[in-house]
Structure formats: structure tokens, C-alpha cells
Length: 215
Image (cartoon, rainbow, N blue to C red; front, side, top):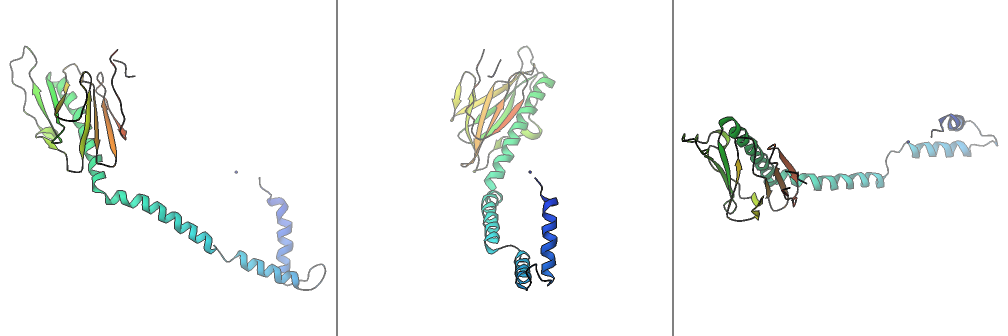
């Protein structure tokens, strides 16, 4: 299913040496002490360090960087969004592995209005044995925090769903229903894409308007 830095040091050294001799108080070629005084004044200016403008520019840059970085550490919803995106991706991988190992069909259900997801196992036709109870990561329904929501879920054949119930099936042969899940916290979003043949989960930053095309 295709988805579709010229150095001038050698010439400058003699000039620097001649100027340094003036700074020791030796008279210049025309006599007098004007040049040594100027040389010492220039040396003092050169050793004065950063100017007030330079320091102000550095402080301005630091303030801009801090204004961009600090809010991210103060915003718990950002950390919660990242955490639940990774958790859902782990659930996808886990359910595919369990379906293959146990020879079962597993279904990951999404309640897009209550922002809850959970799984259940379906019996494979011809097998009367009851499916195993959920355990571990998906032992009980996962409710997203109030700051994180499902934006929508995109399913092949059903299109984009932003309310009601939706689900993804995982089959014993490793196939997974093509699924795209968008999650956000009101300021930033993530896109999870589950590839049907491999079950690989790709996480994209931002809301990616993707779709699967059956060929």
C-alpha cells in the first residue's frame, strides 16, 4: 500500500613593534613627545574592554533567548502533550506485537469527545478461546489530561473524525489499520502516523494534514 575565514600578520608586526617603542617614551622621528602620548592614550582605550553599547547588545540577546526558552519550562501542558504522544506511540507498537505473538486481533479505541483510549481483544474466527485480559500499559483506559486532547483521527475509508468513537485494528499477520492521530494542547500539536504493513509509528511535530491513498 504506497503512501505516497586572509591573514596579514607578517606585514603588521613591524608596525606594531615601532608603535610599541613610542609607548615607552622614546621620541619619534620628528622629535617631541606628542606621538608617545597619543600612543599611550590609544593603548588605554584599547585595553578598556567592552563598550556600553556592546554590553547592552549582549544583554538584549540574552533577554530575547530567555523570553523564548523559559516559558517552555513553565508550561506543564507542553510536557504533558509530549508524554502522551510518546505513550500512545508505545501503545501502537505494543498492540501490534501482541497481536502477532498471540494470534489475536486487538482493537485500540478512541473516544474523541471524552479524550480517552483503551483496547480490547477480538477473537479470531474459528477460535473459541476467550481473549486475554488487558495488562501492563493498557490494563485500563487512558484518559488524557485536561490540557491535552485528540484533535482528530484519520482512518482509511472513514476519513477524518473529530467526534464520537473510532478505532484501529491490529491483526495477527502484523497488518495495522492505516491510522493518523492528531493531538494538541491548544498551542502546539503532534501528528502520529501508523504505517499499515510494518506497523511503524512516525511522530511529526505540528499538525500534518496527511492521508493514506490506497493503490
